[in-house]
Image 1: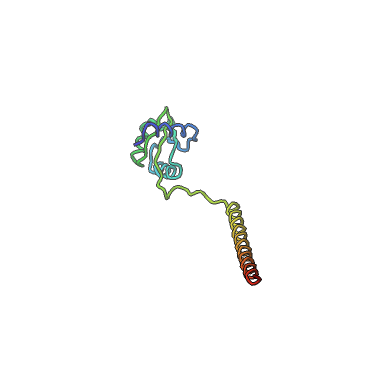
Image 2: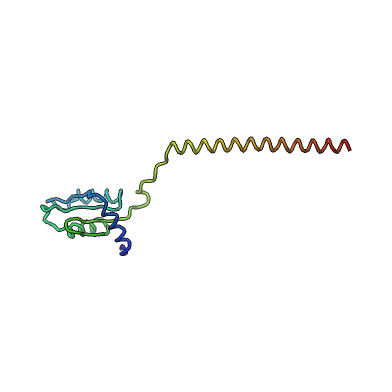
Length: 141
């Protein structure tokens, strides 16, 4: 069940969304239910329109689809309706990594590793020279 704040946020998102579903004279069929199921899995928010030849109201279509899919009705205005169903985590598309950015990141890391190796070498050299100077100074005294 959606809270009123959630519903208001979804209504504002649906306002700019395009209508991707049209219900015609055949009404709510298995093909329509399958199409809405796929759309909900991909988008979570589906906006549909009921044509005049459908013989059903937008509210009836919205209720039938919600019952068939376990979705939540967001709003029904005139012939337009909006459905919402939270997609499971695995169904959501993961953001793709930019290969250019990944390559640049790998190059930066390799340069950093090289600097650290070089600094370690010179640090060891400086320590070795300091030890040699101290030994030479002790031998003079």
